[in-house]
Length: 330
Image (cartoon, rainbow, N blue to C red):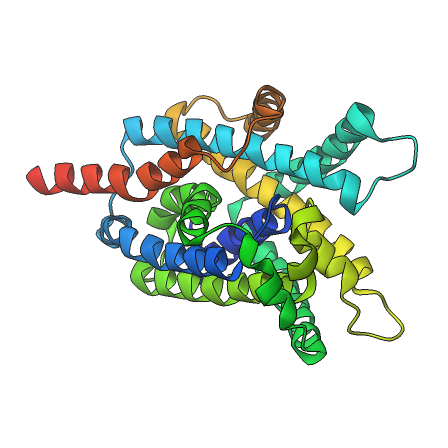
């Protein structure tokens, strides 16, 4: 039976949220960071119809499943594009694998791992995500403490030329594709979904704040010349005398990349089974190839656009609200 706990759902969503922050390209400022945090609070309020629908024992309707599947494919493609853009900065397996060859090699390795993990079932993936999220919490806490101890508060002032408050609010919605996975999996949570939503948004607020504050403290002064400010912040921060934090970050980045893509494959495979009940074998494999194809088509397109923000808002608020209204009219 496909069922997960509220803690597992929160972990599945958080790995994707933090991975998207890792791969963020552009500049940040104290104002845009504030807008981003307000966006998380707004999403918490907008999730109310979804929470009510899930706690009421609602079964996702067929048309909604088709819509969610299309969103999962698109968002999975965007995730792979983010990974391709960041992998040249983070790591390359060996020096001759840059460019397209390197992207295909990394995609192939991640696909094999995703295929193995997703084949173990939804419960196994969800349990593993809790461990991955726990590792991420420890890393982000250590990185934040190190940054605060260095007292680089002048970097925050230096970042004021970056994005504004409204830009940060808009970025939050355009980078929240994990909400789509949450909309699909929420009715499968056998705990109280309302408390699960509180847990998720509370943890997301805390972890996002840790990432954004660390980034501003470390790279605020060089934000305009940094392609990936969060990655650069992790590479420049050295809280340990004998171990560079960027080595740990490379491991964490790889783990979060795998679980982020796996969550899309797992959810898409589940939806394929719901939409096409006779399609039982090779669903995970099919989803991997579909997502890779979507990534190729979406390559070069910005994820920080109106379209992705609209998808998030529709999946989180509009679709559950329509299903809730339709259920109450019956």
